[in-house]
Amino acid sequence: MKVIDHYKLDEDKVVLGRYNSPLKTYRQNETQLIPVIPKSLEGEVIYFSHVVNGCHMGEAKTMGRIKGDFYFPNMYKKVKKLIQSCEDCAKRKSPQTLPRAELGTYGVPAGIADLISIDIWGSGGGLLASAKGNRCVLTIVDHFNSFLYAYPVPDEKASTIAKTLATRFFWNTVFFP
Image (cartoon, rainbow, N blue to C red; front, side, top):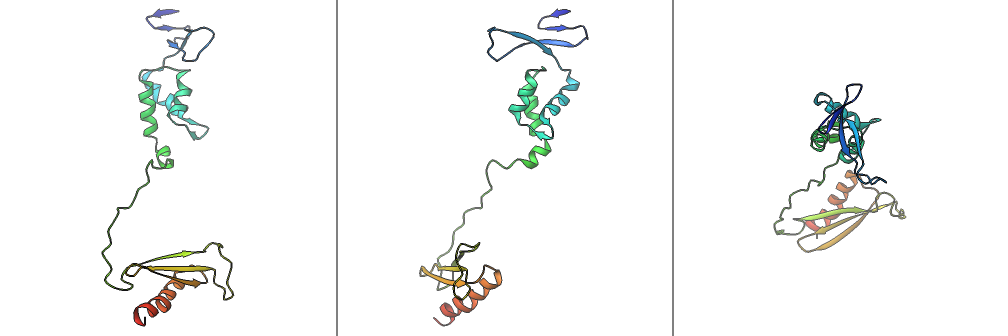
């Protein structure tokens, strides 16, 4: 076995490098020899350590699998770069910050029903059915006068909401107040 600086060649012509174990052992400064990976195989070692049984490991787990068994220069940078460029990981990973809509401003309403907000509550079985079979409540806030209107409705279908808005809210508040 030849030892050249921090590397040596074993009987199978595998280059071994000195590696100081970060783990505390009964020997304080234990040094072990591990294989030095040629540049042509670095990508494969990282990839097969990153994809374990079909699961794509993160940077820390991938480094944990590699650093005790292999060595090559700039391991951390290369592992980070490969994982950041992994298409499968990018597809599955959720964004760190969720996109938000821009805040807008509303003009001052000029009259009744010029600007309204609507909401439906009780959908999904939150309320018991009334005697007339209504399971939800349509609430409407008129921003001109800050009045709140509440109408019982049987469901939250768009056709039901549109019919209630047209026949009960607009008819009673705008056309014939």
